[in-house]
Amino acid sequence: MKSYKIGELANILKIKIDTIRYYEKIGLIPKPKRMENEYRVYSEKYVEIIQFIILCKNNGFTLKEISKIINLLSLGDANNKELKTIVSDKIDTIDIKIKELNFLKKQLNEVVKNCDSMDCTTMNFL
Image (cartoon, rainbow, N blue to C red; front, side):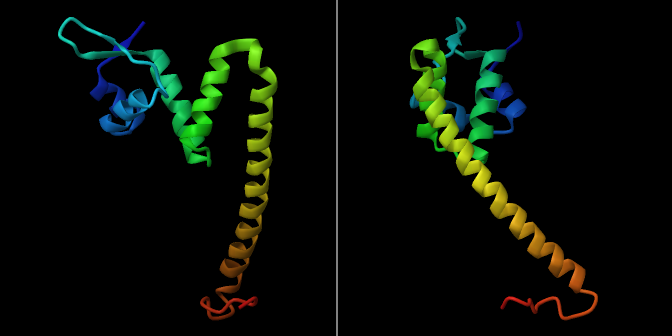
């Protein structure tokens, strides 16, 4: 299995080293093993976990929500109901956001369409 030093991991994920250290500090990711020279060594699993964190953050999850989900996932079947509730609530929020974005997209497409025939700075609803 491939392993990475912290700088390599940060480069792969396109994040700052400080972000990885912060995730470790707050317990969002487990402390990595250390080599004899005390360098942190990260496995492929860290790439997957941090990619999940980044994806969640980029889509409106708070670090607290992400931490809760990761903790519940690590516990297994015992907390399926709580995990399902948290994730279902977030899916509802995402669905609302998708509707809002589709509405905005429709409005912006209308502006682009009308730019040829009117002043682009004037919108019908203003």
